[in-house]
Amino acid sequence: MKNMSTNELEEILQQEKTIQLIDVRETDEYAGGHIRQAKNLPLSELAERTNELDADRPLHVICLAGGRSMNASIYLEQAGFDVTNVDGGMMSWQGDVSK
Image (cartoon, rainbow, N blue to C red; front, side, top):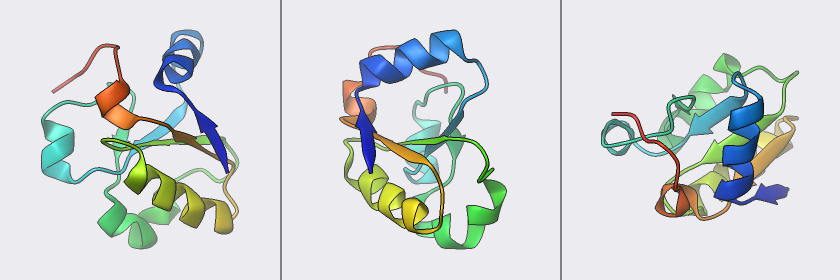
């Protein structure tokens, strides 16, 4: 499984406006503040909603601190996705946040 820092993610987001980024926190956590380009797909719903993801595009996964996103990344990698876990999660994110 690949990992990247939140700084690396911010650089990618500045270059590519349409990356596939999922936030696996629960809906209420996501509503409290999230990266604008991130789609909310809670870890608790991931298995049922994997079909919403594009398996032909790289996928970046974030959560609050990195634990849930790591679990989601392992699951998605086993399902055949090209996945990168964002280390440190939203706790390390220094960029803009949408609500």
